[in-house]
Image (cartoon, rainbow over all chains, first blue to last red; front, side, top):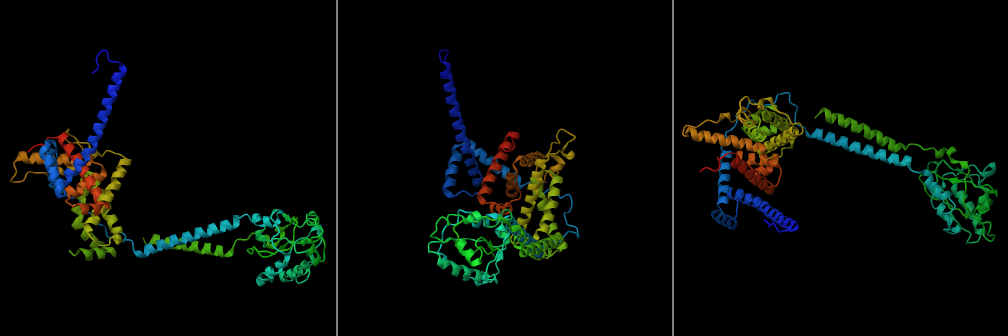
Length: 326
Length: 200
């Protein structure tokens, strides 16, 4: 201990040091004891290898405390092994009414129920995605002014459209034109092929650089009901008209339609994101409500509905059978 | 007793065949549960639960040692019972002794009242052995469940390390470490409680 002249700081330092030494010693002891216990247990069971066993026996002979532990462990194991059997209080036989063990068929029924449930959830998610998808966002690029960058010459447009005979066979739907004038898009047959040919016939009179692209996403379901669609008159006074040498696609379309102001929104059935390419350099603005169009009604997809119904019935059915036969 | 035939019959729903297996193993299964639980009633419940569970999941038995499979089932049942009793601690009326010597873990509830001196053993030695066994039985109940089960299966039931590892579905190293810790704790407990282990 410190003498009377020893400062309090020195005493604290000594206490701290001794405390550290004590902690280190106890830590070393704590680390060594489990190792000794493992060795004792393995030695008593005869599971130590030759070299380890010899080294441990030397330690036993030199450390009486370790030897006492070994002997005590031996006694403990012997006493535990000699514990007599306890008489059972009763028989544990099962009554005859005990349910049968689970059969594999039950397992298969349960697996089937789980698989059908997974299919049902998957169909639910698909339908939810389909119903909640922002349809207007799909149409927005077609109606927004900015994205209509000049992409390809108009001369290349017509083959691109006519290259899809299935699509060209679908009659084009004509939305309400501006100024309450009915759209008159010749030829009377109104097919995409005819339309395209009409456009193609009109375009060659334009200079090769007077080309733009109109991407008309088809289908009422793909068009958001919010904005009304029509081509505004202002759009005709677009940068195209400010460049006289160029012929705007509106004008080309108007010429083919026989109406210089009537512009129609062409539509193709939904899920055909392609693309009727015209020659437009001006933005389109719509005023006629597409919600009025029969294709714009959001309908629940029938195949998904059928798949959901079937999977739901299967899940419930197999689940009930699996539960009854457990 | 043709054990595989009985097992196959029981797998197809023959309760009588399974009951034959129950009669063959119930003493050993109950004793394991008894040593683990430390209480006769709790051990009986765990044993019954283990046999019911074994019958229901008998399809999952893919051969091997049926005894090890049963011991695994009963240790799982004991685990569940110990966890349940840990969540909802309660004191059994049977454990409340009427005399000062009727401490929990002793007397009839632990089943060690069957200790009697054999013919070639003097009464003093028999009493000492009985006291040691009581102390061991009580000390086992103080061990953590995983160490307790390893000790019971290995040192009381006499299973080797591999069988214990199979019954507990654990590795051999885990069995060794748990067993050495259990033995050390029990040895230290007995050395502090009695002088039984320090004698010649």
